[in-house]
Image (cartoon, rainbow, N blue to C red; front, side, top):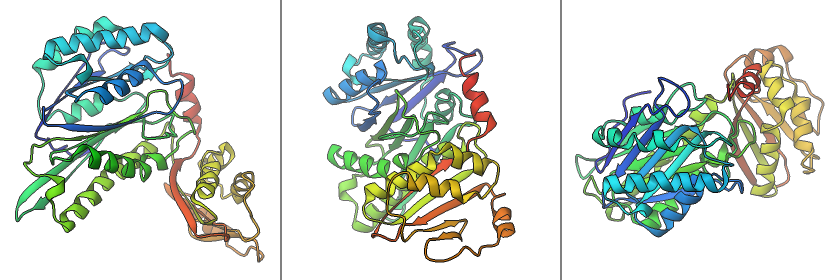
Length: 395
């Protein structure tokens, strides 16, 4: 991961608090300047974690000044105790920083159903406050990891007004339990341009739908998913004041960051050996295209075939057909080779296709031939290591 650029108006810190694993950063804070705005999206899993409920409530009732993020323990499935614990350390942090408790948002990721070691978290706040710095994005990216094999982060910079710059930096974590219904496991993206709340909400919604809502590793929506888009006034520029071209450039770079982080999660999927793009075209509606695409992407039989590097297109056909879509005009491609055309006999070269299946990046494309809508999502194969990682997750 390349060096992540600082965002004026944001300071960060991370430390080892011993929540679950020794010698691992597992607790982080992000302090926002008073002029900052945030937009946040949270999991739609109805078994959501205590910190999700609290963060959602605090976000809607106050201007946010502090984010607290821990890994190793999700504080989900912990009932009233989990709520009390999360509120408790939010209060401790608010007292230390002299913020209102509603200005503190908690985020957790890790094992579900275990009580959070609150004292370890609360006792680390002084150390975190003392080590706050604009250049700690890398440390925070490491602290929020669970089964991730590498930190995920990216920065982009654009020039306006003949030399002045705007910066965007984003980090994310996630490798398993990925098919979000809003965002990713955890993602934090920030920019030093000032964006009003309405525009920020629109930017978050648009970019989530084109990135984090386009991925799946295992078809599981986490109890703790959250995505936060932060705007400071550090650059001295306002989004609303940008000319048309600069606005378009900013939106393009922001989308690049969202897509990069989303795809990084897929590429780091638990035990993954393939990055698979599933494209569906010619659908009657966007909903139909999504249904077919996710049916293919989440099929264990399709996933295991790709892990075996076996172009077993019959499994793809079956996964698409079980959605009960019209298959009468279907054309199916793997790596741009047509493997099935409902109107003709198959004539593709198996050995050529087999060679293409050895690549890390492969594409499945279906043209349903019954409409004008389509979709694209990204997924992984299913390997022995996925089973091993999740079988040993709590050890």
